[in-house]
Image (cartoon, rainbow, N blue to C red; front, top):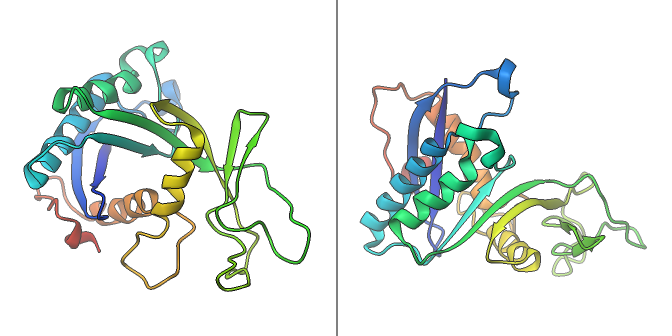
Length: 220
């Protein structure tokens, strides 16, 4: 049994947390990485955006989903989460702009002449199809690289929606400066991904019969 978890952030970085409904996953038949069914994905988006609308009083004009695994589509039959996400979003706001994005660590590294790694914020396209973004690297403001390991860039492994890779990368870079839980200049991980991991650690300790608070402040 798995549980879908969603976090909705507004432009101020405040979030809404929602624990989705349990669902069954057959590892032997479908693999180790769980995916939502079409209905599960639709219901999850509808619930979290309805909760967001309840707090903000208006539905979001634009919805961006960051995911660490690929979006399964129609070829996977009942696990068509791609169309499910779109369906759930448009059920709350039919006019919303949508971007569904899979983020992963890039297997491609860039080299820079000198002692330091590429500059933080470096964006490159490999063969016009493989975007690379350094969210951690040499920082001109400090005139050094504030890290101890070789930085790992991100790649936009998959995207569906209205925005291009450069626009999405710009937003991802900005999201690495929105973690209010520390005083760091920036994180290498965008808050959407970092917060989801923290929330999953918290919700593992919450029994199914307990009520999950949706306010961001309970997970800081």
